[in-house]
Image (cartoon, rainbow, N blue to C red):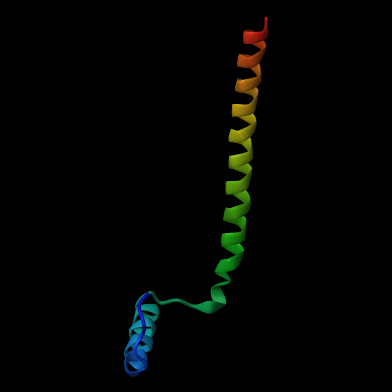
Length: 66
């Protein structure tokens, strides 16, 4: 486990803010809306793949039982 030095916390905060500023991040962009859409789309793709694999498994099981 690492322990963070309170004396260096100002340095860490400064580095974080420098990084944020270097990316021109604007909290008013509502990026969470894009992320929500992305998670929804990824979920749909995942369910499509699961359904496909399930159908393939069903067909294989039917062949084995015949």
